[in-house]
Length: 430
Image (cartoon, rainbow, N blue to C red; front, side, top):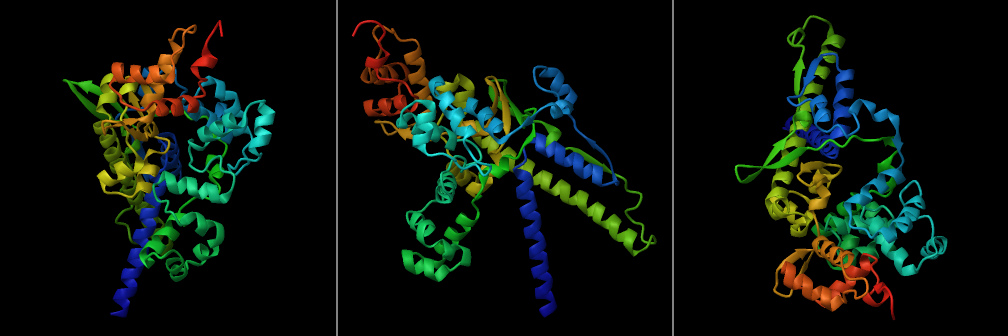
């Protein structure tokens, strides 16, 4: 009986290790995955061939403006470079870009802001309000926690992004962090009047956060963006075609699979290498299946975007997609990291499709990105001698786009975009 229990415990540990490794591979972008497969192939002499139905050469020939995969060693990207490349995915006012870039250049190696907001404002000769908005832009970039000013803020940003933040966690991080390190369930449960199960979830959530997110953006070669899938309309329906480079066909040399008279050391080596391929195929399948479920759900929820464009982007969050797929929010977060899909509007990061929303006066929800996009367009083409007031913008959004929001919402998003009031935008006259 005891031997059976020990065997089951060892089996459970092996399963947990395999799952952890599978989750790590889930985080890889297509480029990182290709590099990883190449490294495993190089280290395993029993792998004869790794083949793809759709070769990179064919993808490059159809996307000649992109950088070839083999030429990625021409330039390396620092943490700052990688963060600045993400700025195109957010709706940022050009006026803020130099302020944001200065903030990114002021991060330390761990990803923390290394100057005060007052120093930042002084160096950029701008207001504290604009610096605070610039910091919001930086803190919206990947990985979550970038731009934090303390470990406490870094962890809170990550908890909120995964919808795991609870009201008592600020005090726990400020005053009782030792309890988290000690995994003192009773002390946390008694202090905050919660169950031991909730205390355990809080500890796991906090321990699952990365204390130094900047280290996740180690200097690396410039990436050729390789999408996971292409979304196109066929026979009146939106269909998803997944590229096979995330799940290639691996051909093994089977010569030595049943050999048992080569000595114990050689036999153990062969067994290890065959098991390595089985494990590789397992983690690749796990990544493929998880990612396909996420992308299918995104396309289902964002069908109006694919049909009509940016103005029809729908609110959709990490938590909501996790709930609908029946997985943990951290799984979705890892699945979308560094992943792209090819659309009629270009190659877009999966993160783009997960947008917060606000409730309209009629009870319906609309993506914040959509409202900001509309505001930006209206202001860009307004009569500069008679600019639109917030109330007029609200009316136009209602009449022309059917989006019903309050004037204060227009003002809030206009300010977030760094767009001055109508009085300050007016050209000529007082």
